[in-house]
Every structure is written in structure tokens, then in C-alpha cells.
Length: 392
Image (tube, rainbow, N blue to C red):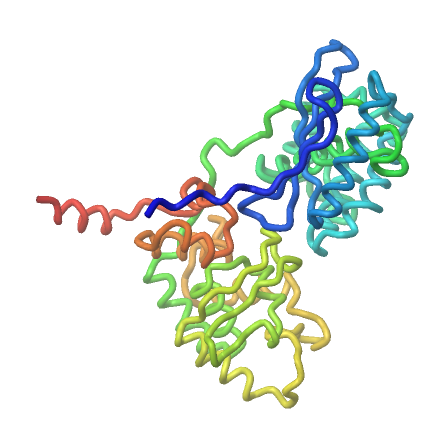
């Protein structure tokens, strides 16, 4: 029997060639909607398609926004933008978008916004940003001439391309958002008629450093964690057996795990992927979690890994890093080679190469299978030897 492919939900408003607006729900991220429409370039006068994310919404909200944008496009021969400074633009974005993000992303957005304001000036017209501004920012971040406030200013230290690209991605997101958002949202004129930096390529690492935890490393780490106590054992096992980011692991609550069904639910707001999903727990993890649960004086909900000083808070990034450093030092893990909790995520992806990619992406919390292949799975000589030896 032939299976018919399920059609993706979408909605269109307006007329083709003028004010046509289409919205649809992403098939890979349910609840996240995209909008596409055609706008007139204020400089060239050419018509060009624009596609942007509406973020998390319902179908009713997506339909309403499509109708509103189509109505606005029908009454505007060309977008008339509102005058806005760079500081004002960041403040509007912070109030309407950043505040809905996770705590770590909010912190980055605000830190990056401060860097751009300090680099280009608070009164800068964002519409006049160009490639020279882009290149100046990249150079200043690489040399350390531009760095966040509050650090050790006696030591000037630049950052790598990955950090710079993260900052610039935030700037691109703000500029894209400004092309469809006005002082009162979609009801008013957009803040910018176009993204002046659209199409510029983000800096990339020539040879990214992606160290991998070996089986020998992990055996030594387990032995070190056992000497440090159950808390260290549990963090290490969660990182190894679930493959998730340490930020998501730190924010797990007891209500997120079901030891009877042997599953754990990862909340969207606690992880970079912003994808809520449920994954299986290994027998070893169920046993460790059971031991940790029995040690608690109260059976009420709380953090699985609470802050060492205040149980009302989850384990901090600094405490997680300090715990890794202690385990790694005892295990003889090389320093200065970018080993850390994220190396466990690469081990997870590499160890489970035989698992179908779709299942592996779900198990480790990746949105895209391409990301696993490009950035996480590492070549395995022993696996290659076994496979080659098995050829007819």
C-alpha cells in the first residue's frame, strides 16, 4: 500500500505579485512558524523575497500576523521606516524578544548588544551599518581590543572565530527582526526597510578544535568521580549516557525523570536547542538517580543537581566547570586542549554511529542530523578496521 506524505500546514494571505504573505509551521520544530513575503528594496527598487521566523506561536497567531502583514503591504508602495538608533533598536529587541529566551541566551544578547553599542556608538543609525563595520568588529574581538566589561582588563586576550560568529549572529537576528517589527509591532512601519548586513559570511575556525573523550579517558574519569562522591558520579553519567549539554543537565528537576518508565524529559527552556523531548535512561543512570533520590530528605520536586550553597538554585556553570576540572585532573585529561563537558557530547555521537541518525539526533537533543555529521562525530580507526575486515 502506498503511503501518502503528510502535507505541511501553511496559510497564505494577500495577492500574488503584490502583498502575498505565507506562513507555515516548521516540520522539524513543531510550534515554530516561518513567514515569507516579497518586499521592494529601497535602494535598488527590485522586488525580493524575504523569509523570517515568527518564533513560537499558535496557528491562530500565525494566521493573524499573516493577515496583518498582508494588509500593511497592500497600503504601502514601499516601506517607510521609523528613525531609530542602534541603542534604541537593541532596547526594543531586548524588551520584545530577549526576555523570552533562556537565562544564558539573555545574558549573551545583552553582553553582545553592549559590545556593538560601544564599538559603533549608541546614536549610530543601524541602516548605515556596512562591511567595514563588520570587519572592524571582527578585528577588535580577535585582538582583545573589544571585550565585555567587568573582566580582567589588565590582560588583553582576544577570542576565537566561534565566539565572534555567535556575537554577529545575534546582530543579524536583531536586524532581521527590525525589518518586520515597528514601534508597535507588525501594525506599524518597520524599524528597518532591509538588513544592511544581509549575506555577510560569519567567521569560521580554519581547523576547529573538537577533542574527543576516549574509552580510556572515560574509565579514568569514572574512577575519579567515584572518589569525589555521588554528585560527581551522577553528573558524569548524565553527560555520558544522555549526550546532552551540561546546561540542560544542570537544569533537570526530579519531576523531569520517571524512574519507573526509565525516561527523562528535557524542557525546551533549559537547552540551547529549545526543543522539548523525552529520551531513554540507561540502567546505570536509573540506579544512580535512585541512589540520589533516596539521599534527599524531602520527596518534593527540586533540582537533581542543586547549587552547593543554595538548594533553591540549580548547579551553576562555575560549579559544573570546577567539578570537571577536578575529575579531569585526577583522570589525567590533557589541559589546554579544549576538553570539557562538551567533549562528552562528541563521545556520545561517535560511540553511537551505528544508531540511525534520526534516533541519534533525538537521543542527544540535536535539531539537525547534519550538525552531528559536521561537528560531533569523529573518525574511528578501530571501527574502520572492523568494517574493512568484514568486506567480502
